[in-house]
Length: 216
Length: 216
Image 1: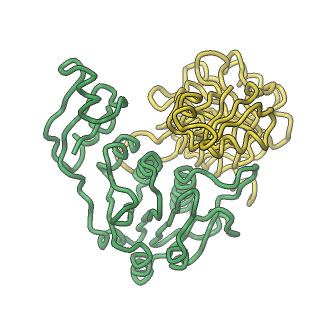
Image 2 (image 1 turned 30 degrees about the vertical axis):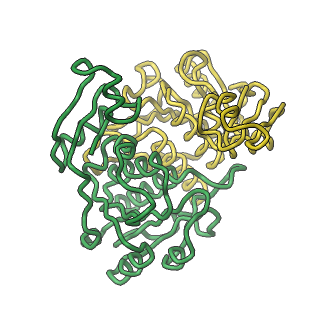
């Protein structure tokens, strides 16, 4: 597949998959780069790399302080990439996505993540609600983020194995996914808008967990 | 000026400026909407509204718990809009931007903020370092967010008047702006990438402040 953009290509070179070829502006014209990656947003560099190396979801909850982000109905590549970047920065164990239809690690996601996907474990599962049930049976606590939930996101004790489930901004969590959560939490809203961006929600939640685990 | 997108137009209608005209898909063809707003991302609705009502920066630090976000060198409209949305959600007093060159509230920013700019106080200042000096003389503590700073972002006590300064991802804070900060803080990084997205940084910082102020 193709990756483009300075950070995305650099991190692919530092990451797990082989970089097969790199094109840089100057060697080839900008129009050729745009044609190769399908976007004007290449910053002068495009690479051909091996397919994205998804991991087995079974391995993500091994550590006693495993932290997994599960995405339900997050379709936007900008948001998916931004969530991956924050998850990598916060040292999350990995990100779980539904295996069909929803999202995948496309060139636009690599770019939006600033290459974080190269260092992050991302797994696909057939059914997200079933995965959450499995995670609970492995001792994880599953928290769903949903605008309007009564519990502020800083209230739970996030030590131990944790899965955070994030839904789409428009529709929230699907009923079976919501039902598989141990607890719903929300970032309190102090303004007039009724929701936050899902990537902003992810960043605030991830760093609340980092804070709690660093300074108990 | 023009605003486009469902949330941006709805919030303009609920907000402070007059909406002069609305075009909806069906009444006019999609191509006409795209021509009007200059983007394919209009979601079927475009409006003409009054110019953006910037506020006077002098009023932003009046409250005893004023919380102001100051942006230094944040040029990307997606990031500026996303920061405005999180600031509105967290109940910030306002956002301060340099008055020339850097950013302004463009149609793309309105769209990226999901219309949050309509309810948020945004002020332009001639010189950001001078503004920060003024803020300190009014009793505010000024925190600069900079990747690599020794102090984790949750360490300060954010009660009282607070200004948070965010810089560009590539270059960080300019020297005079950095010098005008009382303290530099960073979101600790646990992965391999060396920085977070500036809008993710803003979300985590804003909600750490909300947490501290809600549950002391």
